[in-house]
Amino acid sequence: MELGALRRWRDEFAVGLPAQVRQTVKLELLRMSQSGGRGS
Image 1 (cartoon, rainbow, N blue to C red):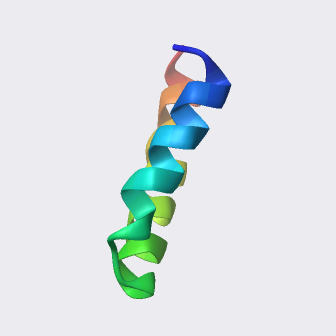
Image 2: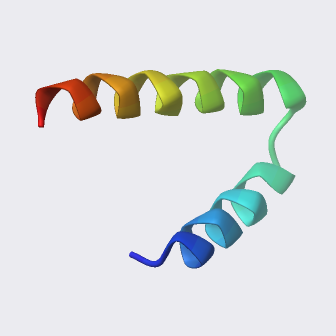
């Protein structure tokens, strides 16, 4: 998937979420990407 499209989807998705939920999702995605990066 194109990075621009992913970023746009994330921004649209985040608009409807409270800031706390947005922070939690961001941290979860960061943790997932870091663990995935080590594995590959």
